[in-house]
Amino acid sequence: MAAKKEAVTFLGLLNDIKAKKFAPIYVLHGEEAYYIDRLEEAIVQNALSPDEQDFNLNVFYGADINDMRNVISVCKQYPAMSKYQVVVIREAQVVGKINNKGNANELNQLKHYAAQPLASTILVVCNKNGAIGGREFVDAIKKNNSGIVFRSDRLKEGRPMELAALEYIKSLGCTIDEKALSMIASNVGNDISRLYTEIDKLKILVKDDNRITPELIERNIGISKDYNNFELEEALATRNAKKAYEIINYYEKNPKANPTVVTVSVLFGYFSKILIYRTMAGKSQDELLAALGTKSPWRVKKIGDASRYYTTAACVNIISWIRECDVKSKGMGSRQEASALLRELIYKILNS
Image (cartoon, rainbow, N blue to C red; front, side, top):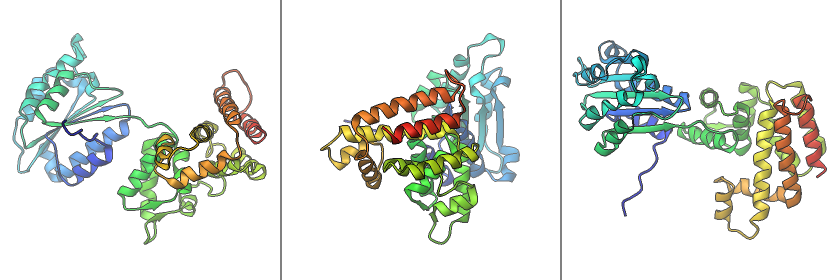
């Protein structure tokens, strides 16, 4: 059996580009524009110096491409006083839509170039807001092993953002604990651009131990180390009503920094994991790690501790209440303020 190829990841690709390990062709497509923009920028900056960009950087916009043969002709030119030339197609999702042409057909003309690309040209095709349409072009890249196809997927809030944050922090040579990680991830929602920007800021400010702490986050990002969704989880885990209501009071006074929709999402994920833990009694540590979507035994232990305070039936009810709160907080079936709905939810959880 052939070995399974590893999936192309944003950080893996970015590290290769910074190491000047370039592919002849890059297809960057998907819903998350941040990854596409950052990879395009990294390719240009690492392949060409500012002076070289004047003569060796060619940028085409999809709406302006009437004939892909013109782009291919540029790709087949040799660089001027440089090792590489870079050819970028931006907004590839609208290529060929002028004059009622088929988008995919126009892009598919690139399949001939993909069969034998020029080693000194780096072609970057950026297709935002969905999957790229030129299937034959993509297939030609894969068949000839002439480039890299990267699917830029938008991450969901909660644990996916925590894992993305942790991976990026590690790539910068820093460390972070669970509380600080939760503080960052829950504060940015699913805004990956803001996530990386905040981490880059913290990287500059860390001390010699390269450790990102809750105190560092509080001082420089404005997230309270005492009143945040991680601390709310901790309070609910032991049914500490006093602490839970202190946090909710803080949220009501600082609504922009603590949006209800994010808190509700965090609580849904948390109690879903408690329910999973309760239904997996007797399972091994590895099975629990996989089921709970974490690599942290510490996280598993904390969820296990919380499961002693909530029965399976209580977890099912709580998840139902959380869903109801989520719907109502978005204005469906209720005119209550989001903060009032959240307070009511916390009351139900503590008294379940």
